Image (cartoon, rainbow, N blue to C red; front, side, top):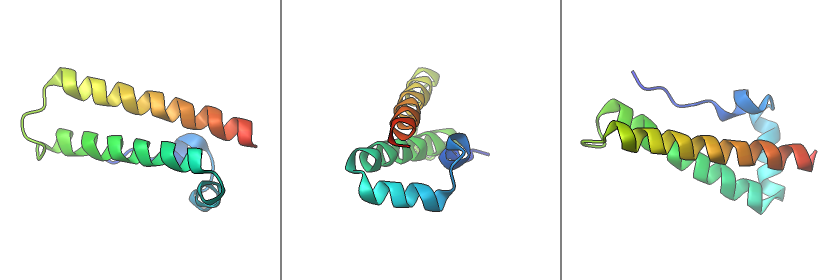
Length: 80
């Protein structure tokens, strides 16, 4: 069963703190929106409800999500 990826656990920051940071930082907000969109696409693809998604397409989505997560981590670490 596909599971939504927990960005907040990966960041080791409470969800409430990230929400506050997003409100003050449009760049962070945009990055997290992109991450959440990619994550939703991955969950949908893994569940089969996205139609016929190839393994290569799923791999590409996961790689994109990882790149966005890395940008978020870097952005948050510079902001603190």
